[in-house]
Length: 265
Ligand SMILES: *[C@@H]1O[C@H](CO)[C@@H](O)[C@H](O)[C@H]1NC(C)=O
Ligand SMILES: *[C@@H]1O[C@H](CO)[C@@H](O)[C@H](O)[C@H]1NC(C)=O
Ligand SMILES: *[C@@H]1O[C@H](CO)[C@@H](O)[C@H](O)[C@H]1NC(C)=O
Ligand SMILES: *[C@@H]1O[C@H](CO)[C@@H](O)[C@H](O)[C@H]1NC(C)=O
Image (cartoon, rainbow, N blue to C red; front, side, top):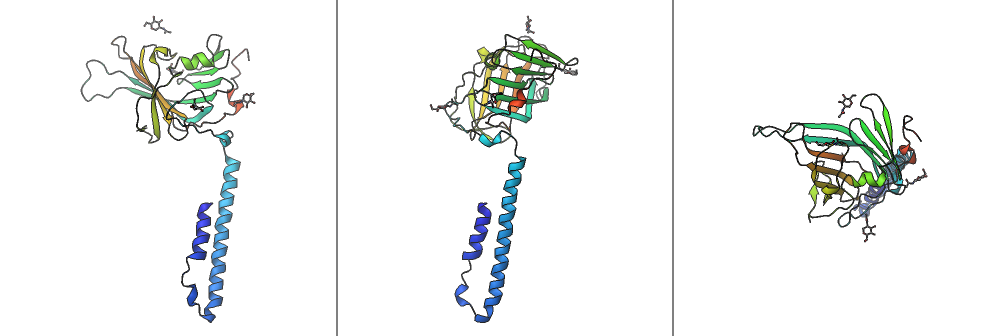
């Protein structure tokens, strides 16, 4: 909008040769002016159209984004969601006899995170095959490893699941901005590795690092680092979740509907 505003302003006021008008030039100038006005109106029309278009096509839920100052007291307990572009990345430990230039094995899978802290509900795609639907008093584990299986779990809730990620209390140690590899400005926080009890990696965590978007305060990513309890080659060194399009807003309630295989509903 401001762009068309500037076009108008420039067209009208930057004509500093207006004083030297010759009478027979007037018709020509008027015509030129009218053309410019027409062009300006055309741009205003385009702009309005684009805004209306973006309203019609906007994702539901994005209209009430809540931005937070994540420089001091970043918390995971907010309403936020990332339905697409999320990643789950496993980095394996290098074997003890690795060559100097050997790269660690890395696996990458799609993931999503849909959280309503207001309603204490969370849907998290944990691995390629396992998604948790967590509620205030119970949860469902939706597993597609060997056909579809959905398991009711009374002992895991929204709160206990998030606790098990080690991010209930996050402490900021670094004073400067740091960059994630996507190039977003973030604040780096450290979680509590002693709380970590993941369903997907059965090893002891020694560090949890969380990244808060410096602009919106949303949770952009976190890394969990593990000690290797033995020397076998399938030991995980780092498990990461990355949600570069995490939106700090209320998710659509329909996104928490459990699949039909999950009962009792
Ligand atoms: C951070 O602290 C401020 C003021 O103490 C408070 O208003 C805000 O809700 C807190 N934010 C989070 C995410 O806890
Ligand atoms: C909480 O759940 C209710 C019922 O499904 C829904 O109407 C409401 O929008 C939800 N609020 C948030 C913040 O998710
Ligand atoms: C996920 O499921 C696929 C297909 O059933 C299987 O090949 C793969 O090994 C499973 N992955 C894990 C980590 O269980
Ligand atoms: C985790 O590993 C330990 C020892 O390796 C084993 O005793 C335990 O049963 C495992 N737990 C799960 C949930 O796989």
